[in-house]
Image (tube, rainbow, N blue to C red):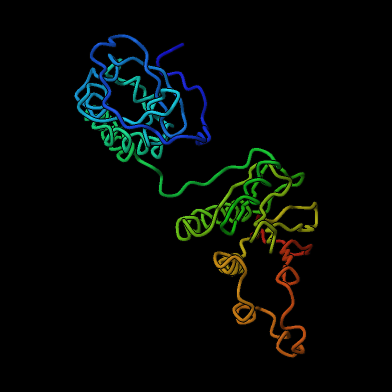
Length: 314
């Protein structure tokens, strides 16, 4: 059995006599194994390992400190045993592979401080400083790779969600002269909004969807509004696809989703005050308390027109 083998992760308090306090005389044991119960996790190791460095463990197992033992001879240490195996590995080898996550490194450092293992404390502090110095992007925008991923992102997000779907190749007609410019304007507005409301709204991009340019707005895991920016122009010789840039409408819907930040359930009076429909003011009091889901807006700017925005001479 290896020296840091953990026999179990949970140990019920033994019924019977209380643990005994005694002075542990480990000088004569040499390489013999001792049994440790660290917060319910059981370990085997040798006195030689425990006394290699000038630490609290050396004081415990060299007779300078009293230790607790149960009736079965397990030496009791009242600490969490999660990282004790790592502690033992450091005592053996003077080095270890630190955990990847900051929280686990902090937990290990707390244990190293308790056992007075200064070398391990220094390793943890250096690792935490290195991770702190790593550059983390201020604004990160996920790009959807599948409908399933999109669904999971929206459902798991605690923030409102704004999604821009743009797929210029998804078109069987030619584009009007201003369509490319308007498509770029939609993309630029998305980037600006993602910077402005970073941390408050989750912005995601979709480049594999069926629409050419479409905005979707979500709150509490469900769609609140949709703004499609395409229309069909019936020119004299052939049909053309037109991409529009309804900037004011996009701004409005982005501000509306901010109502779904926190608290989890928006205040009805705030919803009434920001509603675009003034006709709601004439409704009876029974209608004023209706559920939020009844206010979902499906806004489609997509329409069919006979207007051709091409300049003369084209």
